[in-house]
Length: 209
Ligand code: GDP
Ligand code: MG
Image (cartoon, rainbow, N blue to C red):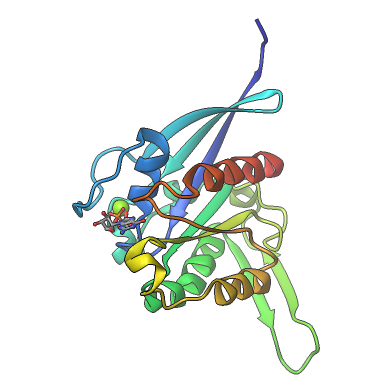
């Protein structure tokens, strides 16, 4: 019998209420989709085991229990994250516009101040400093520019893609501006690209571990 090393990775899923965060997790972990909207209650996280190379990875995926509306998720939610998956709905512009807030909120909660200077310089300058070394180490962050985020554009199934308001290019440009965040377009409903997205999440979290 092969003895794979076990590795626990914590992934947090952030984004506006209603974009499909819980649905993506349910599709990935339980292979189920529900049309009904239920504010998430109960467990803070779900887990899924998957082999990657010589490791047996336990992916611990943290969901918000509807508190994303109030943006008060608490430090326990963020602590020790190995990857942060941001989710928006390709049919809802607002959910794309708030990505900046979620991205910043994550970095702020993990006690990093970033000063983004755009000015007239030909290239952006990113300056960063840590204000809390303890939390910094806990969150495995060495540099916010390299912290593994991933972006998921969900609900691409709706109206065969005709009702989308955020183009793939626009989303990819945003990802490029944040240091080349990987991007996946998904449908929790049709189970499109859900496994590849979470596999990528696991791999980049593992690389950051
Ligand atoms: P959350 O608030 O981000 O956790 O969003 P939910 O997972 O609760 O989903 C909100 C609503 O969108 C529910 O009614 C889901 O059934 C629906 N939904 C989620 N993902 C998809 C998708 O990929 N396609 C479609 N058509 N509906 C989705
Ligand atoms: Mg939810």
